Amino acid sequence: MTLEQFKQVWAKAAVKTAENEKNYSALDAAAGGDGDHGEAIVAATKALAAAQGTDFKSLLSDMVSHLESDVSGSTSSLYGTLFEGMADFVDAGVVELDAQGVADMFAAGLEELGFATQAKVGDKTFMDALIPAIEALKAHAAEGEAAMFAAAAAAAKAGSDATAKMQARFGRARNLGERSIGPIDAGSASNADIWSCFVAP
Image (cartoon, rainbow, N blue to C red):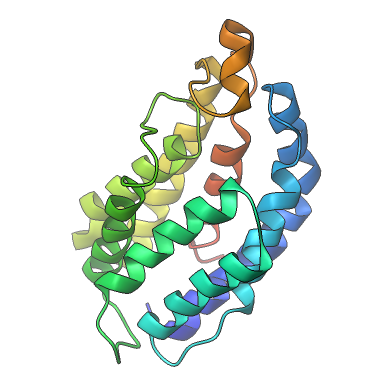
């Protein structure tokens, strides 16, 4: 994956999330949240798409800066932590990564995110999409970039869909107890849509 291709993914993600903004917010409200996830993830992906850099490290660092300066709330904080871990992992001057390099970069971001949230698969959060996606990256990296991203997108979608049967354990939704079961988690839905942007049309 080249630096330009990585940038294009986030341009696509900004469009994709904007198209589904109302759906994300409806899911958020249905599960007991405050109904603003659509607005939050659209703002976050727009900030990520606006970032600039001459290599992966500077681009990822600028992504974090844009999230911190342009967006508020837990969504931007969590994604910011993910990208901060990715930026710390990659060496300066790198403008292209092979499949294994991409998988390792995202895995480093996930490790950093683990220090910021205790949420795991099964807790009905965006981690139900993110963790399976990154695990799929690692498991399928040897098959090449196209296969790896296809596997990650499929894993994220399956993980998100599975949240419909889960009881929320984080955020405002956890206050509903068993009543949070039913709707798909909004954060996982938007994250799954983002992973679909890594798959070539």
